[in-house]
Image (cartoon, protein in one colour):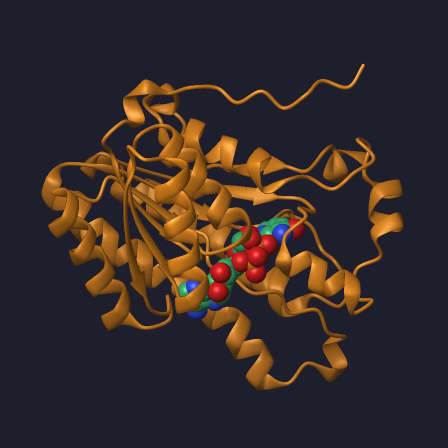
Amino acid sequence: MTREFFPATYPGLKGRAVLNTGAAKGIGYAMAQAFARHGAHLMLVDMDGAALEAAAERLRTDYPDARVETYQGSVTDEADVAAACTACADAYGSLDILLTNAGISMNRPSIELSLDDWRRALDVNLTGTFICAQAAAKHMIAQGGGVILNTASMWGLSASANRAAYCASKAGVISLTEVLADEWAGHGIRVNAICPGYIRTALTDELISQGKLDLPAIEARTPQGRMGTPEEVAEMAVYLASDAAVFINGHSHLSDGGFRARGF
Ligand SMILES: NC(=O)c1ccc[n+]([C@@H]2O[C@H](COP(=O)([O-])OP(=O)(O)OC[C@H]3O[C@@H](n4cnc5c(N)ncnc54)[C@H](O)[C@@H]3O)[C@@H](O)[C@H]2O)c1
């Protein structure tokens, strides 16, 4: 029997200030919905201004009790990130939870991968995560603690041909997660990584339409026989951010329908 998705509730998330990057679409938007459902206060960050405002409007309509603010900017820009963190603290009095979710794919044969493409993937996925974590941690240390959840990928834990820059960037995010968890635990900050498997979003839909992802092959390769949904990944985020997970620190958590377990 296939069990239906059944989200849990974490009342302690009510009123927590969440800064969420890449929040306009896909997994980031689903995370925003999940935290809004809990009555958290949201500072949504994305470089796509139109999509960001549309997302904020939808959230305000669907969750009238949620407080939703936006900051348009790039996670690769230190000034943007610092300003977004300050805007969150100014609006809500704290920055309790950081979701570093903004990321880009980079599917190219390594022999054709340009240095510009390599740098872009590393810049957004890894350096952007560091910039956000450092900026948020300055607020969290001052206020006595917080939670950081970095969206890595199952491709940060396993190799995949034609994804050198993406795999390296996400493996870097996993390593960074472990280092920061160790370094900041004494400040009351927990740092974990979320590693989605194949999830149906605009990012993967585009790769499918370009022929860079083979949907039937992914479904056949996944023990549960399907791609995941953004909501299923978001559910892991609310759990890991909640006080139900207070002793979970420095780990990478997969949601992949059994993809990685299947092995060779
Ligand atoms: N979809 C999957 O199957 C999958 C699997 C594993 C990991 N991930 C990771 O999950 C995260 C979200 O993926 P998604 O599928 O929802 O992607 P998506 O493309 O649907 O959404 C990503 C969002 O991030 C924003 N963004 C991109 N670069 C940015 C930047 N420099 N600054 C601010 N915002 C930026 C985009 O505008 C977009 O709104 C990414 O880090 C991705 O690598 C996705």
